Length: 185
Length: 193
Image (cartoon, one colour):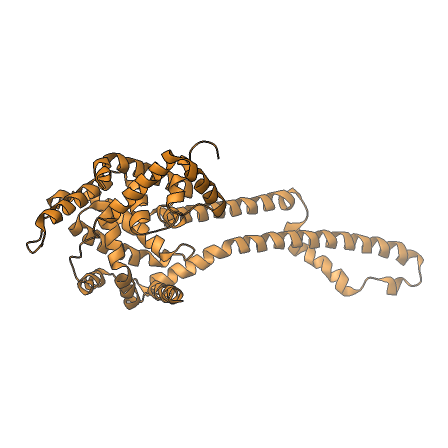
């Protein structure tokens, strides 16, 4: 019931924003900010670039909102813009923060465990970033954002069969590159 | 099930398999340690991926939204209205083509009918007027004779190969061009983000 209400609210906000209502669009920015930043971050691996690319994605979405047709979910449409903004950003600028340069915070109670955790997270991120763009996008949308195959297909404009083969490729590659960590678990 | 479940592994893991196939995979997994091991590996990978933290939040939600708001250019209302008007006009093209086709076909039919009626009326008149005492009231009523005047207006639509073949083919080609344009626009809208 709650989900239906949220969907109705979102549909209403999208319609208002399509008519040029800036406040309605800002509501949508609030609603999707974290998710869009996360998609972009997982795609490019740099938190600073991710925020910039997410803002660019929202600006593009605002400009192109009159063209949006509700036969595709708004979320899929927005994620598509976010993925492309991340890829554009990656092509234009190299990430400024290497994923393995992340620093420990001083007040960590167990610095060694925290260091290991961060090192592992950095390695995972690096392995994900090493995937080809298409496979990486499919993996990010599935693993971190729980999109269904149909939604991923809509977002990336590919067939569900291609979604499946990209996910298979991505996971097989990650199993190879992260094998030592998987065996240790 | 013959062989292993490799082709269905992803969909099974992501709970995207239909119930029937899922039952088949379950039955296979119960008897295949190799596939079970691979599935466990993939589940471990998924859990490892989820152990990486989400994107660190640099700017506050308010600041982020405010920055987006500041850079948002106002979409001119006139441009929106123009785009809506153009969109409506574009969507009306197939209807206009259909209406054109119906008009041409109807005009051709009417023209043909009018061409037949006057020739019949003239033949009747000339054969009866000379021999019958009722010639005066056998004369065709004036309104029907006036229809002959329409022939001038409908002359371009008289049945000939232009109206019978060229017009429908031209309208069909225009419709196909519209369809191609529609497809290109849809593709452009989807691919250009």
